[in-house]
Picture 1 (cartoon, rainbow, N blue to C red):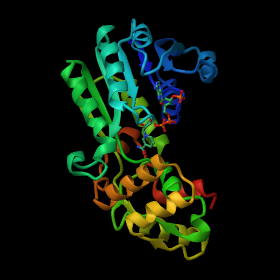
Picture 2: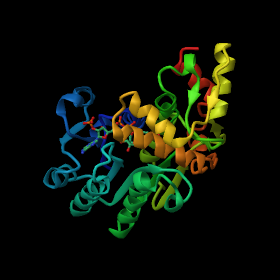
Picture 3: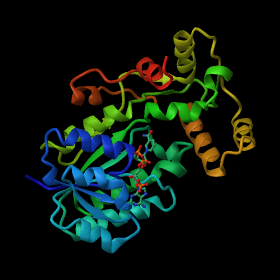
Picture 4: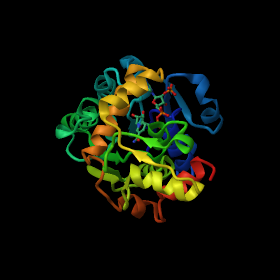
Length: 289
Ligand code: NAP
């Protein structure tokens, strides 16, 4: 059986992938790369091999990759020099003789003409770099998670309404859990060499749809307001949000308005072999409705 190393294993997506992977793959065939050992005690107890390393530490990365056949590189949550972090992991994998890299990127229309290019182009640069290194690849292009809706909508959405400058743009959201389960199925099986999977949804939802579903679920009239982008940024700043978060929210709103996340796809559901979570189910569960 091949040995699989999973990075980002202490994160939310990584945790879900490992939970599902353990249904078909022996813990002794799994290793995880973590930068803080104390976050991996449960994984250690389950019998996974724990490798300590940071995406910035080349020597630790090379040591972690020894004897590994497949690496799942979960994209870094640290946007500072993110492409270099990914490059370090890919270089280490290549140096250690790893044959196959799986990478969690993003599913979207042409990033090169998107307002969010400054933030997300590194996903596609990472994919290109994996190909350039001559490694076998499997690209897992994830849609936006349903779980980002509460971040964009803010904590007072049920009382104050939904303010977000995304216009009529739609998103083919999927739940983090569905994405993690599908990725585990792909990672734990054979026949995925040099393939790119679009993991999104058969349905796309606008922020007006989100407000309307919340209205039905709560029985209150929750209104969607497509605020002007600059006014939105000023509002977030005045609420004390850090500049990086303000800018990230504004970029996502602009890209959604630009219809960059609208494309629908049934691949995720086919891989799951069951219906994926829909908007209503997510809103009910997230807002306890
Ligand atoms: P998450 O919970 O924030 O997990 C991120 C993981 O990356 C954590 O395990 C973190 O380690 C690890 N990490 C960050 N910087 C690292 C470094 N320098 N070296 C080694 N490991 C590092 O994110 P998630 O929800 O699992 O999502 C996975 C990835 O998808 C994110 O990292 C981000 O790139 C992307 N994402 C996508 C969406 C979407 O809507 N599609 C939304 C959010 C994020 P620690 O536990 O030590 O911090």
